[in-house]
Amino acid sequence: MAIVLDGKKLSLESEKDFSKRVEKIKARNFSTPILATILVGSDPASATYVKMKGNACKRVGMDSLKIELDEATTTSELIKKIEELNANKDVHGILLQHPVPVHIDERSCFDAIDINKDVDGVTSLGFGRMSMQERAYGSCTPYGIMRLLKEYKIPLEGKSAVIVGRSPILGKPMAMMLLNENATVTICHSRTTNLPEIVSTADILVGAVGIPKFIKSDWIKDNAVVVDAGYHPEKCGDIDLEGIISRSYAYTPVPGGVGPMTINTLIMQTLESCEAQLGLD
Image 1 (tube, one colour):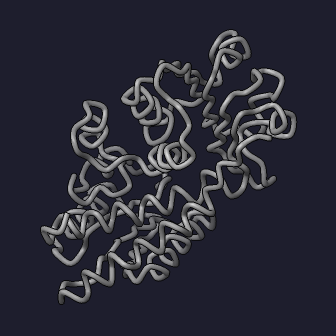
Image 2 (tube, rainbow, N blue to C red):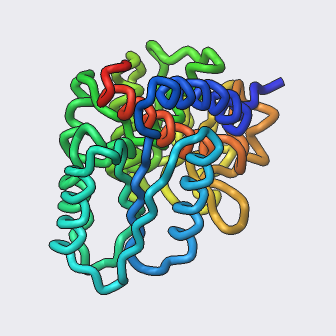
Image 3 (cartoon, rainbow, N blue to C red):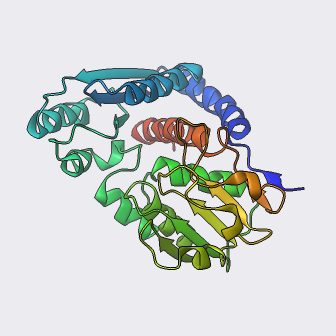
């Protein structure tokens, strides 16, 4: 029987610990941890994600500062807002909801976030530090996956890990995190030649390509650890899980696997940022 990597269960258990840590901060007369979320434009999916993150803050006793900017906001205007939040001592974490409107230089805006408030793990500096195994907040989805693998005691050292996807906030940091745990890592993408053959070598497979059921179950070998980081309106991920559940060593369900861990990791890192600012870490 395959192990179900239950992100929903782990996230709920983690929130109990987070709540206690928030209470400890409040009991010592410190300010409440605050996550600032920036939403540019009116994309319904992005608005839903921001709302979910705000609700997660409330569940553990944290506050969220919701900032909504017009679709026509320029890169310079957005950076100015980020700099204001960087200077605000009451704000412990800053999240710029991805994606921003196409006319905005998203990378420049991400990199404007103070490294100490980069709780979503999106800055170039944070990625570099994490890759070099220096202290930094990790990109939330890959770090959430790493926490899930650790919780279920999935062996990583010496294993062949294949990541299908190369985004700067998922595929690339996922590769570095696994490499730092002594896995042997291959990064692939939708244009990789002989992709099925490469996937078939994976002891640990991470689907992060953003295409529904792009990775077919018959590409995957028996007893692999299958992590699906995708989620689509069809309520499926990037991997055809139906044909692999009975053959895998472990897998993440969709929904309920990786998704809850992403938001949970964001909340955890905001709390850690607050503790660090107050000298409690």
